[in-house]
Length: 409
Image (cartoon, rainbow, N blue to C red; front, side, top):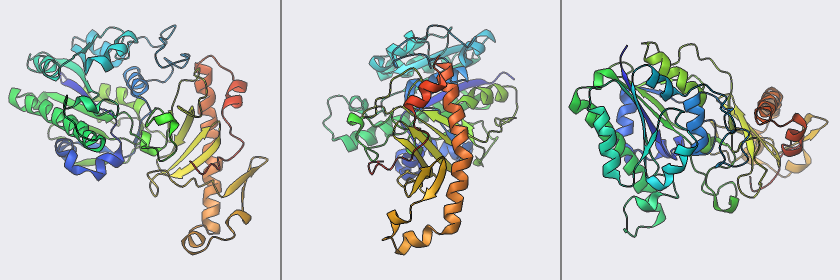
C-alpha cells in the first residue's frame, strides 16, 4: 500500500476530560465516530517527552540512563525510529511542532527519530502552512503534528494578550487543539486524499489538578494513575471502521507496530495481545523527589491499576474509580508479604462501606494484589536494569513491602 500517515499529538488530554467535555471536542468526536477508538489505551509515561520517544522508537529503554529529562542519552539502543523507517521507504517524513519555545529542545534529543528533523514554529500560521504544504504536495508522506498549547503551562499563549482566567484558558487550549484537528481533515477532504491517508490521534498524558497532592505545583510528570495515563487513542481510515470500539489493552509502545501493519493493509491490533500495560513518571536514573515528581511506576490489566513509589503500594479500580481516589489497599496491612485486612481501622465504618467491603470483595482485592505485585516488581527491575542500575538500588527507592496509607493519596 502507498497510504500516507498522519500522527496527531493530543497534548495533555486524558479520557476523563475528553469524555466529560464533548463541547470542546466536536471534530475529534466526529472522527472517533468514523474511526476505531481504543478505550483501554494507556500511555507509558506522565510526561510528553517520554511518551513521544516511547512511541517513535517502540520501546522504553532509550533514556532510562538519563539523570534528568533534559539529558541526552549516551548511546542509542534503537537502530531507528518510526519516521526514520518511513523516510528510508521513500516517504517524505517530517515532524511539525508549535510553539517554538516548547519544541526546540526536543530536536536536540532526537525524540522524533535520528534522521527526521523536527520543524518548530513561532507562529501558528507558519506551523499550519508548513504541514499543509506537505499534505497538498501529492507526495507519499508520514508526518507528526504536535501543538503544545493545551498544556496547562502553555495555554496562556492561545490568545496572546487576552486576559482570561486559567479555567477559560484551559478550555481555549482544548478548543484550539480540536480546531487544529478539524483543519487537518479539511485539508484531506479539499485535496481528495482522504482515501489514501491513515490518521492516528493519541493523548500523551492527562493532568491531575492537585487531587493527589500539590507536588510543588505540578499537574503531570507525577504518579502514573489513570487520570495521567488513560488517554484517547483513535485510528481513522476512511470508510473502514465506522465507530468501532476496541477493548484490547494497548500501550504506547504498540502504536509503532500498529502503524506499520496498517500501511500494509492489516488491522491495527494485528498480533498485539498484551495482558498488562506499564507506565512510569521518571527515568530509572533519575533521583526520587517525593515532593515534586515522586518517581513511581504502575501496572494495569485494564481494570485494576497498581502503583509503587518510595511511599509504598497503592491499588485502584480504574473502571469504578477512574480518578483513582480510593486506594483499595488503604484498609489493609502487609505482614511478611501477606495482605491482612485491618478490622480495627474500619470498626466504626457502616452503611455503604460495610456493604461494599464484604468478604468477597476482600478476597478479590487480595487476589488482584498477589496477581499484580510480581508483574509490577519485574517491570520496575527491568527499567532499572535498562538504566544501568541494580535491583538492590531499586529496592532502596521503591517500597514494595508496605502500603501507602497517606491521606493525601
